[in-house]
Length: 425
Image (cartoon, rainbow, N blue to C red; front, side, top):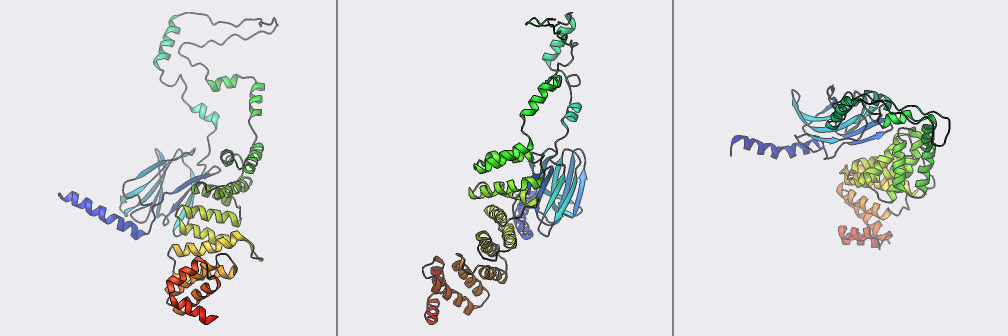
């Protein structure tokens, strides 16, 4: 085997280990629009360099570490369906800083941007990224038939017109019904000129016709009422389409309750978790705050195997408002799901144990109590507190003898748990 092939095999063997050392998960950046702003969410450290290029306009972010999103050296490009954010490209880049990850946003025009970053994740806000240009300006700058290259059929028609003299034909001066109204002569079009397109014909319509057509289009207020009606009927697809249409017409504060209601209904029906996350985020970014919505957001992230992020939303749900009567089932579930997320993501045992203890202290009679006792017993054993672990297991077996988690405790701790139960009677 030649030396170059050996080098390639060595690089392929080393690359996964390098990626794991960076601790980055294989996950694509999330891109969505909030009103006219395009939001890009990235998991990873803060970029050490941000630059802009032209032709085409691009925003380039360089991140420390050799890999990003598990894609390796070769760049991956994804087209985006926004007015002024065309595509997203990610991969590796080599320069005097060494090999590092690079994220490139391809833009239709220069945009203002803002970054908000934590230690492990960040968000890029592109103002005007989803703002559609003025149609009138777009038409004024668009190529016309006269400025673009004519098609063969247009050239033949122009040649025939140029060599066949004829006078412009006029409409009848008297309408068929015998009225006195005079009709204007039909406008003559010189050879090779463009016939009026649809936009031009629309401009020639009488004002009354244009007004009647505009009156048929629903107003934003009517569309908002339609969204509410669709949600009442559980017609989630219609509500989703209407809310997407309203993003550029209404403020986030008005749409937030509707996006929240849509996300909650989608959670109940177990619709695509990425879609639930997007709709919940629309409401949350606009300032909507509700325990149940945070719980839905956490569950949507958990279904996408993003347990660490889910845990943060579960924790946030436990901290919204108060529940003096311990009657809020959503907050109770959030407590135990938060503790479980910490357990599943490998957080230190003492941190996880404290979370379970806080959950059980907040809701002492919760349906999850048996499970909580079992988890606390395991964590005590992991910390080397064998006596505490066996006492918790014995308490579980005594209080919930027929529960599944009691049977697991018996298998895990054997007869010693049963002996402690007997001694405690």
